[in-house]
Amino acid sequence: MISVLAVLKAGGAFLPLDAELPPERVSFMLEETQAKMLIVQKGLEQNGAFSGTCMIADAQALMEENHFPINSSSSPDDLAYIMYTSGSTGRPKGVMITNRNVVSLVRNSNYTSASGDDRFIMTGSISFDAVTFEMFGALLNGASLHIIDQSTLLSPDRFGAYLIENDITVLFLTTALFNQLAQVRADMFSGLHTLYVGGEALSPALMNAVRHACPDLALHNIYGPTENTTFSTFFKMKRDYAGPIPIGKPISNSTAYILDAKGKLLPIGVPGELCVGGDGVAKGYLNREDLTNAVFSPHPFLPGERIYRTGDLARWQLRIHQQD
Image (tube, rainbow, N blue to C red; front, side, top):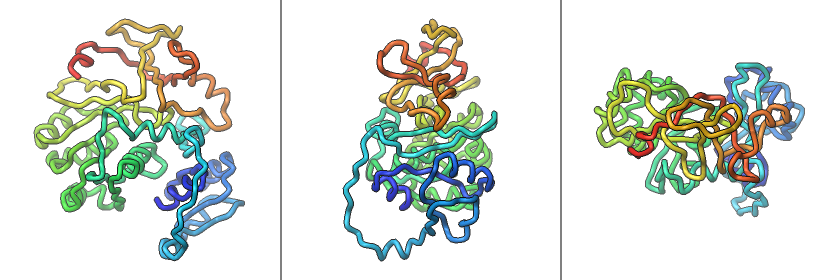
């Protein structure tokens, strides 16, 4: 976390690397991004070949450095970080996220009211885009951020105890992890103020169970691709669902459209491609102009802006919009 803030303060962009990634994948990302410096924990220096400067993160040594503030020359449209997609369909793609994208996600938004009284917790890999919400949702709103070990996270009893003992108020969980925890203890989230769940289609039964076990919890289904900076839409559950749970409406500073193959708006109830726009749309893919041009398209209704074509099939439901 210190390293991330230091890079941004110095006007640079960071590339998050999970220590569990295969060395060949790490090498690919370092080479493609032309990273100048690699900051690692002691013992991880050899996880991937690197010809640049390698710095071992030493918290104690950092505390002994001078604490004078430096002036940052970063602008809103400068890169903040490059986040690689899974690459399940071939070569991994580096998504270029700007400072503006990050601020748009976590500041003055309609899906979160985070403040200095909140306590977030980091549950995902540093290489997973939800970390953007966890880190900056906390720090850019004056909240505190807790970082825990995997053994605690994967134990429902220990994780539940940690949430209570540390008075955690805001949490994001992938659908898979939420399912794993909720099946064991649906009431473990009762101390939270807000829980966001996303990444895959949700289980109505488990979401209903948690809603009943935690009546004061604001429980949200959250949707968004990395290419639109983590979150694009949100849906707050206010009743039980027997079928698919809606993904809701766009977060602030974002737009969502259901378009046909020609880029025309489709009527209510007609399935089409979900396309998202607004301040969260990334710059594009690093060194992949062909793919960038294929899915980052000129906005069909707002000249000068762009949309991201998600490839996901969706339809507009008027009753959901009216409910919220």
